[in-house]
Amino acid sequence: MPLHFELVTPAKLVRSEEVHMVVVPGTEGEFGVLEGHAPFMSTIRDGAVQVFATANAAPEIIQVRGGFAEVNEKGLTVLAEHVEG
Amino acid sequence: MASLKELKGRIGSVKSTQKITKAKQMVAAAKLRRAQAAAEAGRPYATRLAAVMASLAGKVAGDSAPKLLSGTGADQRHLLVVVNTDKGLCGGLNSNLVKAAKIKARELQAAGKTVEFYLVGKKGRAPLKREFPTLIGKGFDTSTVKTPGFDEAEAIANELIAMFDAGKFDIAHLVYPTFKSALAQDPTINQLIPVPAPTLAEDTGSVVDYEPSEEEILEELLPRYVRTQLFGALLEREASEQGASMTAMDNATRNAGDLISKLTIIYNRQRQAAITTELIEIIAGAEAL
Image (cartoon, rainbow over all chains, first blue to last red; front, top):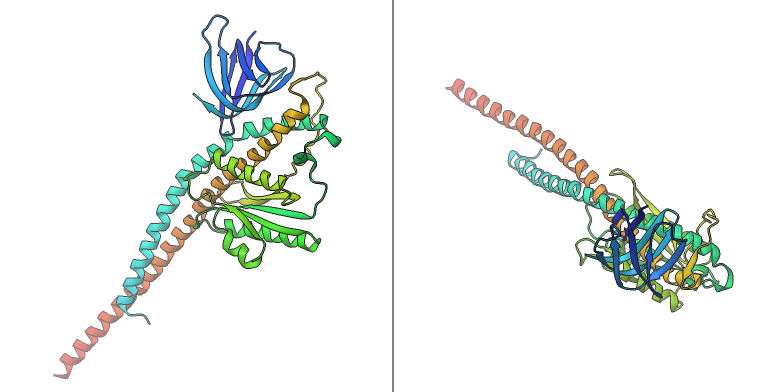
């Protein structure tokens, strides 16, 4: 089962896609989100979001600054103020 | 009656005015599409942030709520943040905004509150200063950048929050145009600080883990929310400006066209009259011989 991942900045919806796993740089440590993750909310520190399209694929790295991540039954939403790359 | 030469001059000047308005209209039409797309692209972030805010604010209520949410406990000093455009040639957009701000200010003053203005954009300064010479506080100049973006919104929000933390005002209202269509842009007044308690989202029943605690997340979220509000206002302003400008310039171009055809008719009539007079003079002269 894929995970629905959305990356949103104030200027636009950067990503909205089905992926295998996303590793998010939370304020209190990195955490990986797979499908079926428990509802969770965390602020994020400046760092890289790693997106794994499939289980074995090399991660795609997106630099984000300022924001927070929310996991609910619909998937993972990362709200970031700045996104690079 | 104007002479032929004068008429010719007037036709010429109206024609060049028409050229200007036509060019401005086409530029506005092209920019409008981009501004509208930007305004639309900004919406997902705003709606998601609002949803998260709603679910969090419901949980963190009472004394532990941050100051940005609960307010200073007073409602005496009001700050009106008025978002105007930097350039003119956009019809009644700015005067409508100023009018809305004035009404709000009068209303607050009638209720015995003190009012101060914080102006974003150039065009509101003069009319508001005429009306309330002593109440104009600081402002933010957006004319130095081509298209105001999130960085500008961030700068404005940071300044406002610093002013709030320093106890300069109790409540801030945001006055900005909402873009409805190229024909209609309505001035809107929203409470900006303290952040209005959102209507409670329906409880999904699921237990959400927070990292760090709810309070800390909310603490970080509220300035973000203010920033997003301002960013939204800037985007709406951009779209409204282009929309209003397009409509106003379209009207002006059409009006200039009407004026030109009217003046041309007068010009032709006078020219013919002059020719007829000349002919009569020649004939009369020939007959006299």
